[in-house]
Length: 485
Image (cartoon, rainbow, N blue to C red; front, side, top):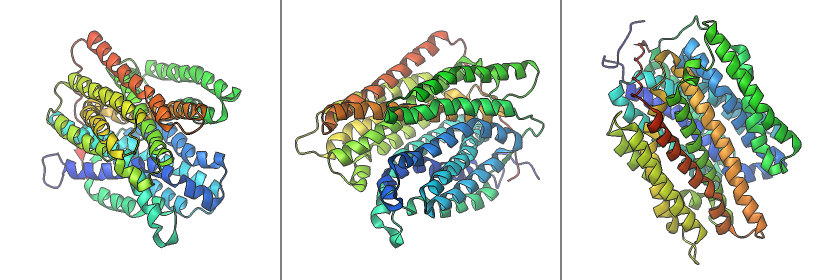
């Protein structure tokens, strides 16, 4: 297979990026699109409340637990191969979800979807990280930020349209079946246009580390998902308490492998790298705030003020428009001034959240979704400014041969943060709502958004600490060779 470079004819990193992000987009909208369909699924399949919850929980658990291991598998077996295999499994699982006749089949198919998502998602950032030279990475990550943010708000709108349309009398099933043509296209085009990156076949896989990491994620995410709904029974508290020693065993295992000169699931060099760790902390905080906000905002708009799923999706449109503008602007700066750009973006986000909290807590007497347009646009603009430098700051410290592990770790903790954020924000919302008789949606929304204000304030504190503790900037990693298609 003849090696090719980014400037050679026949190799276009931007075309490859579009395919990578298209595959990732399926995963992103799938997380939010299902929420719109849950009432229809419950009615159609006669599901219990617990089964309905597990339609989402099974996906989140499988996805979060698999991100770091499959990131490492990509380093060993080839990131293009793992990406395409993940897209294939995700597409197959989508078909199984769409044709499910029972709730157990749907739940297990959702878990299979989560595994497919975990296979493909770490490879996206890892491939982009080594495919672009430093001067082009900012625009590439800005594009990734746009896609990530659009996924969060496109799901409810697309789901509402598909369910309302009741295509061929299939009710909720098209929300899964729509993935089939997209997945098949990505596989066919990806075989031709996504480059084959160098891999390390001699790398040993740390199966014990995989088991410990997956157990730690399970011990954190499962009680977070179930705890608030069940009133925090003893076993939820016990699982959270057990997560700490299991996590310590995982770290101890990685340190022992490092001393033996063996490959680690999460390289110790990354665990000792303040730039990487603080960046991952900011990613967790950032992505714990946004999904939870959109979950309670959908309830606020639909249940509180009677909007249908389509109207609710349209009401949130200023957010992705703001993201696109912010991403376009930040992409012009390349790799320059990452920390100041993050500080500006997060400060705008914080201001937008304070504005949104006021607007939702004091809705006009004749409710109009237009009252939320300005704060949502400001929040989206701040997020658009933040995403690209945030991702760059995390991955800058990652050597090319560890890009899969670094990307997988970042996105694994991103999902843990999302699960924790959704649980905290929804708990704040429903505790206030039920405490006020079940109809004070404005007060509940204002109460829930306290978390977003706190999360973005915490990010600014981490940025200040990074600035105080950082010496000279970390050097950019060397690029990997790109070969063949």
